[in-house]
Length: 108
Image 1 (cartoon, rainbow, N blue to C red):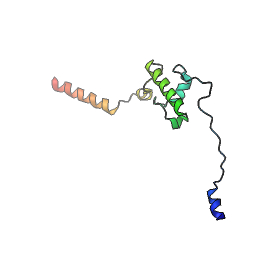
Image 2: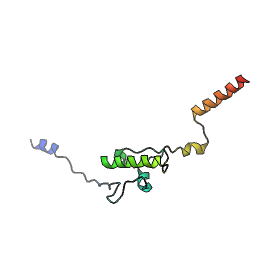
Image 3: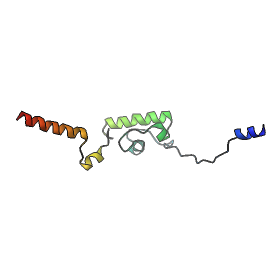
Image 4: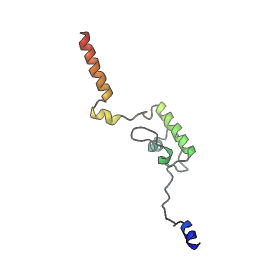
């Protein structure tokens, strides 16, 4: 009986409480780019609530703010800069180019 009680009692682990990503003074607004940019991935995607460690209400407000900033062209919808810097074409566009060349050759 005594062993059983000991098994139920979990060992207390010390853990460091993480600081909330949004402080009480921060306004969640589409103009607050320094705040909004923390919740966007490198590709320009909105990060999930688990990754952001936000409450449901905060995540909704952040999402709305990001979408407003995108519509007002303060933020890009996609961040494809790396793809264009390398000068590589995607397989789909490369295939289209060869098809267009072939069509031009057959028409002539």
